[in-house]
Length: 81
Image (cartoon, rainbow, N blue to C red):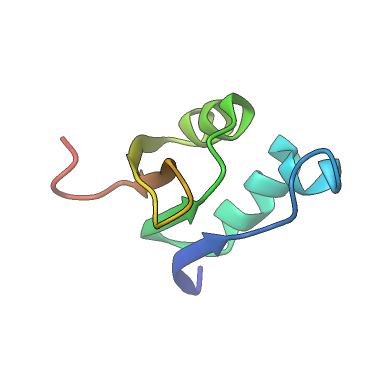
């Protein structure tokens, strides 16, 4: 449980599908602290559902220039309730 933040910027699921499976999210989650943030430019439903299944509160946020939106997952944040 070493990481506060995960910036997940893997290649797209069509190029590297193994990086977008729930099993990988579980591994990443096991390495994060109790109040971690998971952020990605991906807006895929599978990632959203996977994070929710792991207990994250998932929010869509405006993306940077060139990206319409991005996703942020908050893990057990004190202000998320």
